Length: 284
Image 1 (cartoon, rainbow, N blue to C red):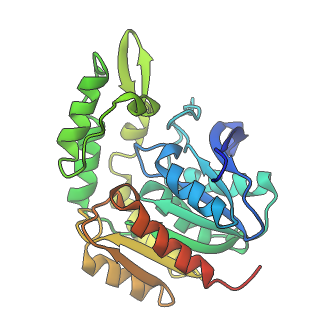
Image 2 (image 1 turned 90 degrees about the vertical axis):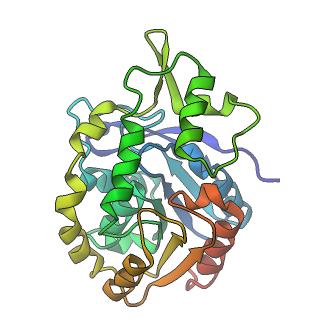
């Protein structure tokens, strides 16, 4: 059985504190996991443990403004800054070419890193249900949920009810205690963990940045895997094929009965797809 991860506090751009979980793993390479908007590093808990058991060194980070990471005092939540944070972490960890696995927000941040000036630091890229041109209706549904409780919740059950309404196809856990990883107490009420300014800053950013991200995607040379949930409201089958035209060497795996949060919907199937892809990479 893989030992639980070690909690670490690292620094992103401008010295902003970033919380992370670290699995020492083995010598098969370094993996950096980055979650989607509104999620935390805990979304990758099973994936991190699985990869460590396979011999990978793994770091799962709370992106700036999320989870236990600091809120940027200047509200710098540009996608370019999220990406620069990832490169800063790789420099801090002093690792060889790394494998980036990113979902949604973390996926686009990883894509920019893989196609940018620090591409030499990237060994492989795994995008989880995200492309440069996500479906706006899917993105807006996510944002609507994130904006839906500005006054917070009276208790855990109320927060669990909100999640159940947002994810009607997901089985509600018997215990709501684990939900506290995603909540913070302020003023006697429970609030979601993210900085509300993250939503304000990124309200229309995705509409203007798709063309830039598309240009950067064309520069990616690292082995690339796109994992799409077949029921995704963010990436359609047509979007996935368009991405494969952008990055002709990329591979595509579709996970049946999974929506946008693929790893959470079917973690075993997702894990098998990732492990198979990584096993085929050239050795370090």
